[in-house]
Image (cartoon, rainbow, N blue to C red; front, side, top):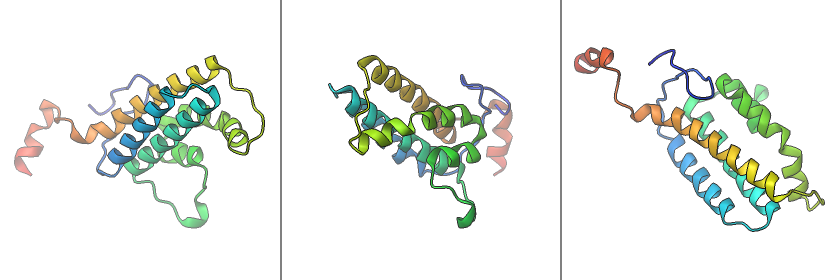
Length: 152
């Protein structure tokens, strides 16, 4: 499976931690909450929070560690450093950070139904990519790897 590409063109990477699964489950719940929001701004905010939980799952899956003084607090920066195959997602969500900040601060920022729906859909696609990364740990090894499991 090494060298295979997922639909985003990202490299296949093994995952060794079980910590990302609860984060991804929380992201899925937040996205479902977003689906039930009538207000497009609230739908956008809930979907953005789901994306943040997805980023946390990526960071947990890649077991990203850096010295504290090098560590950014920006989830999108951290994710792009820890998992370069997710840089497209990092850039996309970083572009929407100012909208999220404005909405949370109560600053008037119009989010249309279409914008909220498009963002919601993109978050869903991102979470599918995160699931691909997190789900790797539970996959059955390739038939060519059977000897590694028997001799272990």
